Amino acid sequence: MTVESIGHWGIIAAGEGQRFRDAGWAMPKPLIPVGGVPLIEHAVERFLAAGAPSLVVLLNAQDHASADWIRGRFSDSAVRVIARTTASSFESLRELLRQGAGWERALVSTVDAWCPSEDFLRFIESAVAHDPDATVLAVTPFVADERPLWVTPDATGQIRDLGGSAGRMVTAGFYLLPERLRRLSPPPSAAGRLREFLAWLVHRGEPVYGVVLDTVVDVDDPDDVQLAETLMAHAPSPPASRGTPSP
Image 1 (cartoon, rainbow, N blue to C red):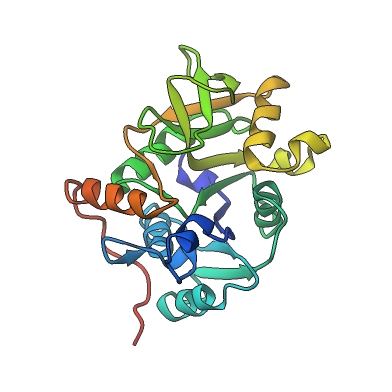
Image 2 (image 1 turned 120 degrees about the vertical axis):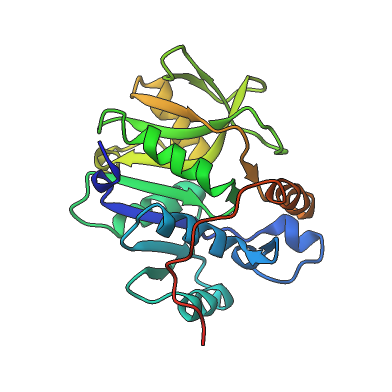
């Protein structure tokens, strides 16, 4: 399987960034700079470098600043902005998946998952090699999160347990999803946060696999920004941009 098997590409950027607000950062989370570049630009550039012909960014309906920034930085043909206020991360995922039509697999990232670009490309290369009906998550042994979502993969990479208070690896914010997930009807207990939905998939025996990335930072507060910038200083330069610069 190749990247051409991915028919829908999207970024979830609808969170409010409360921990940044509590720390006195006034800007919306997608515009938080890491190495002088907004999180949303890091995320979009990774997708375009991976070969995405176009993608959808889901923003909070009140986040006009991020919407204006994206429209000024990228052409509408490359990046489509959807403004929705959702009740949960799971609802954000479902809304994002609804924005595509006729696809078999979707690649989704959260806006606050930062890693070197070559690692993101490696995730895609490994993820698309799995069966098209499988759900594939990026996982990492690098734990820098106050509320990590622990996973337990077996020797084949299939995730046998997700959740709990400890483990060897955590989820890392990148997902390759089969279209059939849109037709599942999880119980209310699994229809809140995205982590609850993923745990439900694993525990009901769905084929869920992990692709290990050495270092992914979940950028949730100013300390995470500093950590990502430290790692960035030692990472190779990213691929050339395909975006359309602002005039």
